Length: 146
Image: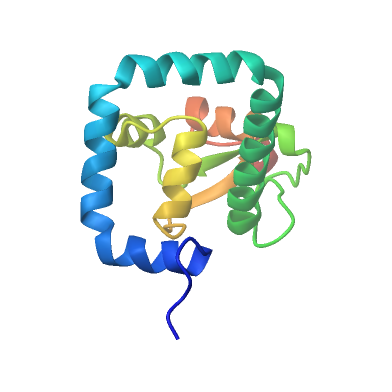
């Protein structure tokens, strides 16, 4: 039996069969109506600014927690001193060269964390607190190790 027209199943099948045309048409529509679309998006943002900002903050927290948990092997904590306050924790390049690596990738802040997730959590990273990470970067060692 064929799904009835206008049912969600019908739309899904239609999309599968006509995906390229739909995407091409959408791209062309956006190109032709860019100013109108941007104005509508700005208005929508202004109307829902606080809700959107809160959603972004929550998403960033979830992403950071996922990365920190992975590289800590469970509960996020500093690999050097054991600090557990999430606000103080950061990702460290074990072999150093983190700034050069992020510059080469063009990924900073939350975008670097997303890069780690999208690249299946590559090796060579660990969780350190800001103090331990800063000390390792400046002096090559952490006072907790001495």
